[in-house]
Length: 172
Ligand code: SF4
Ligand code: SF4
Image 1 (cartoon, rainbow, N blue to C red):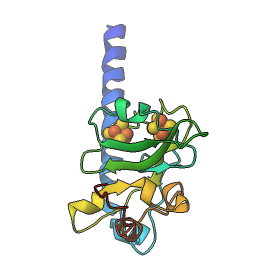
Image 2: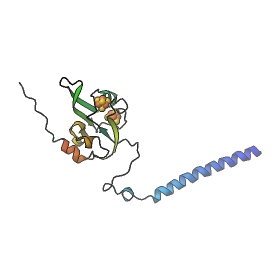
Image 3: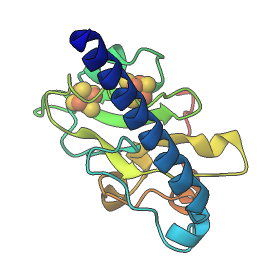
Image 4: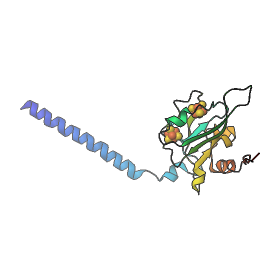
């Protein structure tokens, strides 16, 4: 009988605890201010956690063009263009490093295999644009301080990078 009463007491206590947590969370949610009041977005950036997975950071000067990031990407949204470096230099010259953010799912699987540590997930979360073209970012056309910077990647910077004219191929 005593054990039974103890069990009933424990069950009631657990239930009350659970209901208290649910109720306090519901009240907190009800009292919460609107998102724009708390953060003043977009005038001021929203702070993110240190390990937030935002748009990438890429250092073109360190990349060796090994393709490991592109091979690791489960949705094939990294496109690397490269040419053989002119002798006596060895390796490749990266002429394009494009990520299609209409496909990227921010899984960060491309980051770990990079042997040169030149690709990371950044803290930028906003490259909103009016056309899908703005979601396709060629990091090799961006200035290094934008491509490698924590918060330099903006729709304006991406738009400017699309104006870079490439050498036109001509028949010899
Ligand atoms: S974060 Fe994931 S989906 Fe996006 S480019 Fe890297 S591997 Fe691909
Ligand atoms: S894995 Fe790193 S070094 Fe290799 S191509 Fe990708 S970014 Fe460049």
